[in-house]
Length: 378
Ligand SMILES: Cc1ncc(COP(=O)(O)O)c(C=O)c1O
Image 1: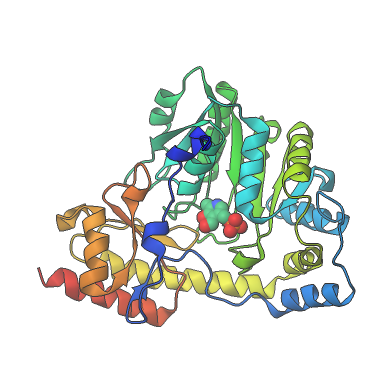
Image 2: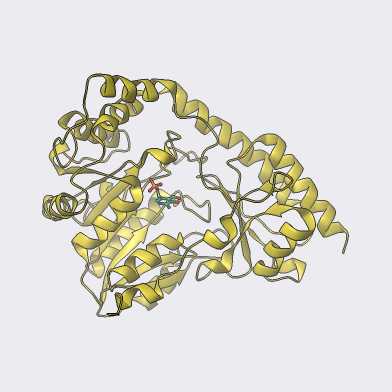
């Protein structure tokens, strides 16, 4: 038999090993998706489109209406990208892959702020690029600029920014984003900005796009999607926008790889972007849960938890319990019946566990109670 692609052997499986659905007796803090239904108006819009027979090929980069709606949505985040430079992709994940394919060559090094969402590492390895994991400051999970400077080599080509962040829950302050832009300018790097959690920020300063700073616009590839802020994970819809040269490359990649997302999903995605009330209510509910879970977790013996600033994750340092993160997660499942993600599944996540609070308030209270009883029994 001929050999499979050599790049594949280095590609990990992310959180998969700790995501398998446990029995109903287990409290699950692992799944990173909103526990809301997709807003009814969005579902109706897809049904209406099907009823109109919109089931055939259409514009490859996404309908004009949808690209325009994304362009207008981005304006709310002070991002200025014309509709012509937006491509709609099957999920934010694929948009990230497209952004990487358009900007990287095999052997290029890409800086990740570690611990980073594991799919970035996997995608880079698929492309033959080299992920360089640069640890963030451990006390607040914000970028460590000294460490970043040290990580740059002649091969560094890009940095991936994800704020609000999965898995850390950090939201970078505007001055930090500006520093990231200066850093990228100094070393002539692309900035791949994954803004998927941009509508879920619990700090006054909100999400900041690198493209708003001088020198940022021409090197930032802005990537987002509907999964988290609109409760649409299963719809597989994302966007990528940026400088025309990059997006022209993305258009070619998309035309070769996917043609376009399902035609009847496009009007639904437009409808989603027109909603205000529903998305605000979902975000407000996550914020409330953040307040409750942070207070409860921080009071647990041996745990220290920086206050999550956005998304729906709390990243807890468990080293004070005397266990490493894998032992903690394994025993929490077996002995306390609470499922969480050990941080060492990501480089730089050693000693940390990720808790997703995208679950009901009852689950949050019950899950933390179980952890408290378990930890107090030692
Ligand atoms: C940081 C980050 N980016 C992208 C994605 C993927 O989004 P989508 O489901 O739209 O592909 C996720 C999903 O967990 C994520 O956490």
